[in-house]
Amino acid sequence: MSWLSKQDGGDVGYENLLSEPSEKNESFERVPSAFENHSERFQIKDRNFTRQYAHLYAERLWSFRPNIVQAAKDKWGKDIAIRKLHELQIDEKCVIIGTLFKHMEAKPSILKEISEEHNLMPQPVRTRYTEDSDKLLLEDELQRIFLVGKLKVQTSITGVIVAVYGKEPDDDRGKFYVEDYCYQALPEQAPRPDVGESYIVFLSGLNIGGKEEKMFSLQLCVDLITGQLGDAAQQKTMSHISRVIIAGNSLSQSTQDKKSLNKAKYLTKKTAAGSVEAIKNLDDVLVQLASSVDVDLMPGEFDPSNYTLPQQPLHHCMFPQAMMYPTMHTTTNPYNCSVNGVRILGMSGQSIEDIWKYSTLEDPIEILERTLEWGHLAPTAPDTLGCYPFYAEDPFIIKECPHIYFAGNCTEFKSKIHKGPKGQEVLLISIPRFSQTCSCVVVNLQTLTCDQLKFDSQFISSSHSSPEIDK
Image 1 (cartoon, rainbow, N blue to C red):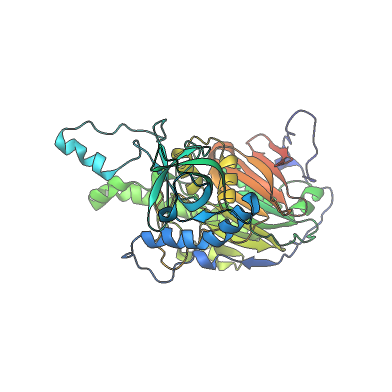
Image 2: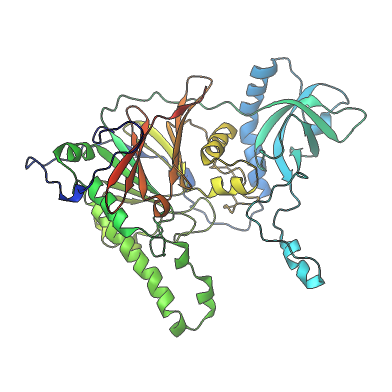
């Protein structure tokens, strides 16, 4: 970033930054920015939980089919035979389109959990559930068939819409041998405008209210963003920050003590007070930011919002101080907006973590890229990830290509430029948990370059990232 110099071989430390006065008594105004919220499709208006989830899978397949048929013809020729499963002919080379289902013996099941009542062996506690014995199936509106061949089982997940090219051999009926496969093409991308010097700050995983919270480092971050730290040049650069997006888990998991629900009120007084105190501390942080810059607060897994995706905005009554400012906004998770014409799409990280559990994919930025290629924000929902039973649409389908695509609550900071077949360029960002790394991510909207700013009690450092380019 322009407000921090660089040294070869590592981060740059600004020791005693708190004591550095500005050389000139100057004041800087926050540079105005144009903003649009495109998250209407994630807002649940008619709450109806009596529907079956089969409607959601059917709608997902119907929505994807036209685009994936076109992608298949572009890849294998206009005359390629595209069959439904009930139309398959033995040994005919053709394309079939459907939803992937991954059969996993180790996947948690309520039926296996109650097996203890019948004196059977209980399921072992695991963090990941994929095994070598997993199998892939493809299902359309009427049937399903086992997939064998090029499509890798371990890196595939349930819920992805795919077109596979191959055949069902006569000597092994009931199995489709995959020779090649494709997903829908990346949607069209609006041209990225010339925005000048403009930045977005991403924060995630503050975990306020738990032992892991880093309030002193968080205060340093707030002071830097609001222009309370640094010299005149740094403060001038801070004035070009258009928005601060906080991507989930602002409160710690320890504030969700479910055991307290079964205790007497006088025994849960301390637990309840801890949760309330965490909200107050978060409000104190937000009011400082909102008094200087626009703030978008997304809910996360441990925040006081609904559990199922899409999570609805946190109630404004939780933040009596910050909500006095028109610059304070509570948003949905996932979140879609545009700042100065730059389209931004992202989530608080639940779907990335769920895909990690049910596959062998390790790198959060690789998983994020896979969801972009699959064209879906949360393909494992509703199979292993809770979501609302939508009927007429699947709001998680990526229908417009963003310029910036992010995921919060990741283990580390990484960035990558994903290039589409029609010249699309998408900046992928994995935002690390602040409670673990004491860092935020700053994105230059003009150049789509990233910086990870780390905050410590002794220094502030900047780690520059030139995003890896997908060739």
